[in-house]
Length: 120
Image 1 (cartoon, rainbow, N blue to C red):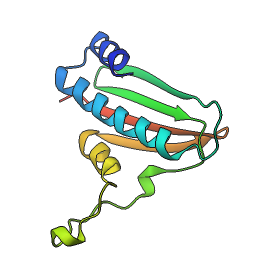
Image 2: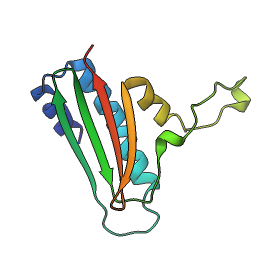
Image 3: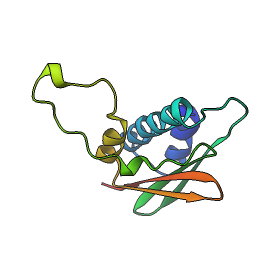
């Protein structure tokens, strides 16, 4: 996935920083999908589509997992001390930080996470 994404983004004129941002966010989103979206075994599909406009790139990640909108997860709050810190749960915050816009929709029993990165 990373190799395809990097090559596709470069062909659309992405900078190396944009390639890094998309790769990081796509890996986080896809890893979470694989880890949590499929409680039952069997064959499943995750599809990625990258498109470019003069002022932005758009990555759409679509899966056939259980309905889940990661954007409904509240932003992480900084713990007061190490004892209050929890492991994990920072992935969507990372995506929000590195992307210009994030959108979610559920269409035809599929989750669709759209990540948009505006040109600098």
